[in-house]
Figure 1 (spheres, rainbow, N blue to C red):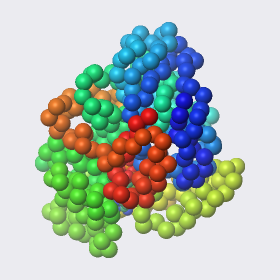
Figure 2 (figure 1 turned 90 degrees about the horizontal axis):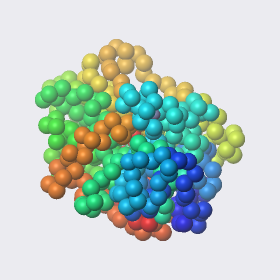
Figure 3 (figure 1 turned 180 degrees about the vertical axis):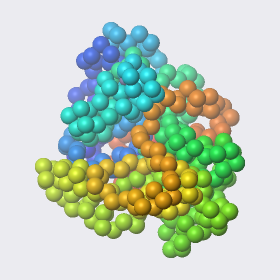
Length: 392
Ligand SMILES: NC(=O)c1ccc[n+]([C@@H]2O[C@H](COP(=O)([O-])OP(=O)(O)OC[C@H]3O[C@@H](n4cnc5c(N)ncnc54)[C@H](O)[C@@H]3O)[C@@H](O)[C@H]2O)c1
Ligand SMILES: [Zn+2]
Ligand SMILES: [Zn+2]
């Protein structure tokens, strides 16, 4: 079968790889009909390269049609249409019982001291072959996949795999009070969707991103927008817009590749150039994140407010302004999204009248063969690329 494989820094290719097949009784195999490229894939494309191995199959946003199921997969039959959550979880352990599916104790990657295994996401998360391929071996298929109706286009459901639950959890964790205000830093697919969800709940939303067409998409839905690169005093401007206090909550939907942290950016580049054996401990132990967005969130949020982080960070020694965090009495919540915790609630909004605008959310749909060009354009933010769907 054909699959998008990682070959090196900024080098993905479409290769022939062995077919996905059932090896455990809890597996299923699906024929992939749509798979998407995520901002998290961009971390693998460049800064997290030391944790990748040439030949790894990319992708964790996947949907398709069930071809075959293992002996213990009761709830699915061939022909069912499913969306596959990006994390692999059993539905039965203590953590799954708490709605913390990203901490699933059945799939935790204990060798690296990490939470639940993820599709297509580095050694730290189990090196599980991903869904940017013609077929996907779905693990824990007795619980994890989300069955979706046979009607409606893939565009309506594909974001249940990651974008929707991640943005939903970001808004939940932001804890915006009724009639309150929310600043969203980063208007990629995650920040954009978080704005849509917060607007739908009636919150005042201010979105911040340096890229004009990303701001325009969010402004069109009714948010106020600000340019992250305008060179002005962003926290001051936002305070003026929010009764002189700052917003009740801030979502950081930027993550470790934030613009505006030159020193960390340099460290990430150096680590990307070293041989894997040297770079890997350096990436894991050293503070390699660019914390520009997170530091800005700390400055922007009102005293006693809440910061919700959905952007991925990976450094273990990142210096943070603890004095300010403590003095401002800020609440911090973060983590990978627990997809099945939120999917039933979200499903109610995936209707014909499409209140979140999911069906027009993607900016590009390309054949799987064009994945290399799509990665390049998504990273460089050229050609208006915000969300790319791939058709195997
Ligand atoms: N927690 C989860 O479960 C989860 C799931 C999916 C994605 N993510 C993470 O969420 C983040 C965003 O994902 P995405 O798909 O939207 O990616 P993306 O790369 O398209 O979006 C990031 C956006 O941040 C903007 N940006 C950069 N520096 C900024 C700054 N200093 N201030 C404001 N904006 C800035 C960029 O212009 C870009 O639009 C990534 O870190 C990704 O790994 C987390
Ligand atoms: Zn994703
Ligand atoms: Zn579990």
